Length: 350
Image 1 (cartoon, helix red, strand yellow):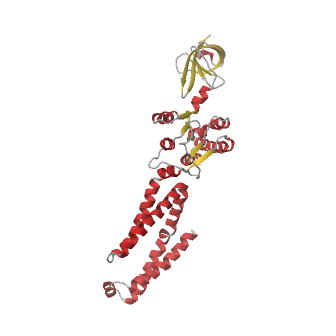
Image 2: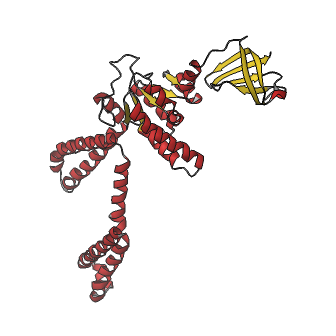
Image 3: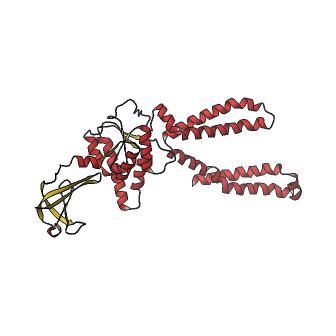
C-alpha cells in the first residue's frame, strides 16, 4: 500500500508537470478556444488527476507482475532468456550502423525498432527451444549434469510421479538399493504436490502433506542421489503427459503405481518400473492346490462368496464362504489371478 501511495504521488507530480509542458505546446486551435488563464490550471490539474489514478498501473503493478513472473520462472528459463536477449541485442547492434545511414525519419526510428524486435525474437526463440539447448549443454535445473548417453541401461536415472511419492514405498525401495541410477523429480511434480497439500479438501490436503514429508525422507535416506530438475515441457498442461514426454526426451525410466500412466508410457516405448508389480513379485507364491487358513471378513460380489485376506494383503475369494463370516477356515487355492493392480486368489472350502 505504501508503494501504491508513493507511486500515486509521483504520478500526480509527474503528470502535472507534463500538463504544464503540454499547455505550452498546445495546438493553435486550443489556444484560440480556451483562454490562457484557464489553460494554465486546466492542463496541470487534468494531468495531476490522471497521474493520481494511473500512477500504480504504470509503475508498481507492472513491477509486481514482472517480479512474480521472474519468481515463478525456473533458473533455466532465466538463463536461456538472458542469453537470447544478449544475442538479439548483438544482432540489432550490427544492423544499427547501416540503418542509421537511411534518410530521416527512418534513421532515427529503425535502429530502436530493430533493437526491440530482435530482443523479443531472441528471448522468445531461445525460451521456446530451451529443451534442445539444455540437451546440448547437458544441464538441468540445478546445473548438474544428467548425461544418459554414456551410461548403461542399468544405471539410467528414473523419474518419479506424484502417486509414487505419496505412496511412500519408494523410500524403502531406494534405501535398500534397488534403484541404481539417480532419482529425478521434475519441478512440476513438486508443484502438483504443493497444490494437493494446499487443497481445501481435508483428505487431499493430508495426502499432499504426506507426500512432501516422504519426499524429504527420500532425500535424506536414499542411497541413490535425488535431484530436482526445472526442465519442463512447453505446450503441455497435463502432468502425466509432461512426465512421459520428459522421460522420452531424457531417456529416463518412470517409477509409478498408476496403471493408466504405466500403459501410456509403455505404448510410447518408455521403460516403466511399477511399484505394484514389484510388490506382487516379492509376495509369497501361492499355487493352485495349496492349502491356506484364512478368516472370512466380508461377503463377495458374487452369490455365496466370502472374502478374506492373507497377511501380505492378498485378497482371497472363497466359494460358499458367505455364511462363514468372522470364522477361520481351511481352503484350497483353485486359481491365481495376477495383474498390475494386484493379485487375487480364488479358493474353495476344504
